[in-house]
Length: 484
Image (cartoon, rainbow, N blue to C red; front, side, top):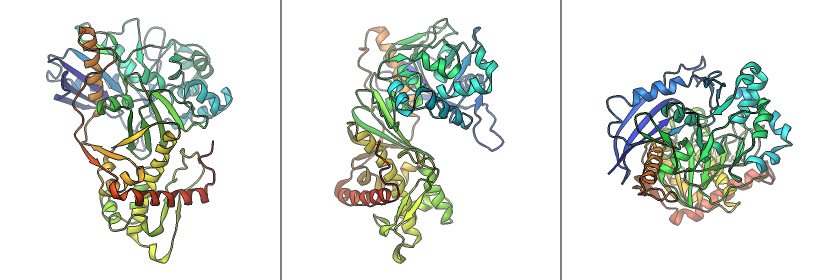
C-alpha cells in the first residue's frame, strides 16, 4: 500500500485528504479556511493574494498530516488568473471568480474575434466575465501598467504546483485547467497565443500542458507532485465518472456536464468544451438559475428555509396542478435570454395554493436543468445516469422529481470533498506510472462513492408529461429560444 494526498484549494478553504493508493480509502484529512477578508457586501473578493492559499495549505497540513505521503495532487478553484512578472513575482493579487468588473471586457472580446461562433470554433467556449482570457482584457484596459509587466500566466492550481516544487524554471498545467482559460483548445490540444495577445495586448509565457498521468516534478523533499487540475475536473475524477455519466450541480446557478470522448464545438455558445483529468472531455452547460429560484420562492411564501419549502412541495402532486415556473429570475444563459425575467403560468383558482407554487419552483428548476442535459444529448452525449451534487440534492422534493424529469437514473453521493479525492487519485496514478505499476492510459480503480440511487421507474411517464407542460409554456413565452 502506498499513501498519497489530495489537496483542494477552493475559494474559501483548503481541504487535504490522505488516501490509500490501492483502494482510495481516506486515512486522514485536514482543513483550514483561507485568511481572506470578505468584501463590504459580505461576498467573496475579486482580488486575492495567492499567499493566502499557501498559508491555508500549511495550516491544513499541520500536525504531521502528510507523514508517509509519497505523492500529492492539487485541485484548485477555476476561473483564476495569477499574473506573474519576469522575475517570478505576482504583478498584482490574483483575479478570481465570476468577476463582474470584466463583463464589458467579455463583450469586447466576443466582438474583437468576430462573434460567439468564432470563439466556439477557436477554443470551445465564448468569453464570460469569469474566464481568464476576459480578465486579461480587463487588466489591459483597467490596469495597463500591471498588464505591461505581466510576463507569465498561471491559474490557481498551476501556481500552487509551482510553489510546492520550489518555483522551478518549468511551469506546468493540465488539459482540464488549460481548457477553462479561453486561450487553449480542447479540440486541438494547443494554445492560441494570438488570443492572449488579443486580450492582453502582448504575448506572455504559458505553462506546459502535461498529460493526465504525468508528474509535474518532485519537491526538494522528494515528494512527487502530479499534474493538478481544476476543481470541476478533480471532482469528476473523484466521483469516478465514465462514459454515460453526467453531473448536475445545484448551486445558486446550476450546471450539467458529462463525460464525452471528443471535444464539442457549439456554434450557439451554450456548451463550454472542457477537458477532463483522464484524457477525455467534459462538455458543460450552465444555467443562471437553480437554487436561487427555490430561495426566492421560499421568501415569497414566508418560509424559513429550503427544507420547509421541500416539505410544502411534497403536499402537492406532479405537475403542480398546472402551475409552471420558468425560473429565469436573473435572465438566463440556457437558453440565451440575458434580459428576460421569470414567468409563472397556469394560474387557476384551484392551483393558487402555497404547496403548488412550492412544487412548481422545484419542477421549474429541475426542468431548466433537464433542458441543459438535453443540449448535451442533442450533440450525441450519452446520459445514462446523473450524479446530483450540492446540498439541495438532499431535499426530498428534489429527489422525488429529478429521476423522472431527467429521464435517467439519479445518483446522490454522500457529501465529501470529491475534488480533493480526485486530486489524490491523480497523485496515485502519477506515482504508479513513475514506479512502473500503472499504465499511463488507465487510472487506478478506486472504490466508488457511497451514494443513494434513485430510479425513474413507473414515474417516468408522469415526469415526461410534467416536462412537456414546462416546454409548452417555455415555447409559448420564448418561442425558438433553443434554436441556434
